[in-house]
Image (cartoon, rainbow, N blue to C red; front, top):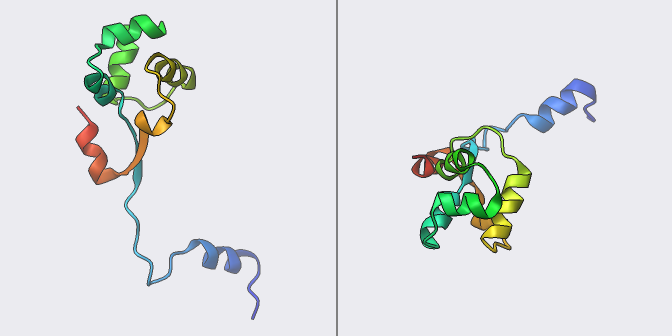
Amino acid sequence: MIKRGRDALDELYTPSDEEEEREPLRIVLKIGEVLKTRGMTQKELAELTGIRPSAISVLARGYIERLNLDHVERIANALNIEDINELISLEPESEAQQYSR
């Protein structure tokens, strides 16, 4: 029997009994780690990027709800980063906690 409408959508988006519920993912900013490995201070990064030091501090600690893509571009350029994975990653929520400071 072909399911239509709401029944088809419910089947498509409802996990089956065999599927385990997946842990939510969180976006993790690794700017603080990158600065440490490069021996650079937040103040130096602020000067190189033209981003306010307080904004760099918040980004380095990962305490943000919104991310300004212009800031990410400026930081990546200032740090000569070509792979965005050096700055940002998706982690399971339980692992993302280790990045919070």
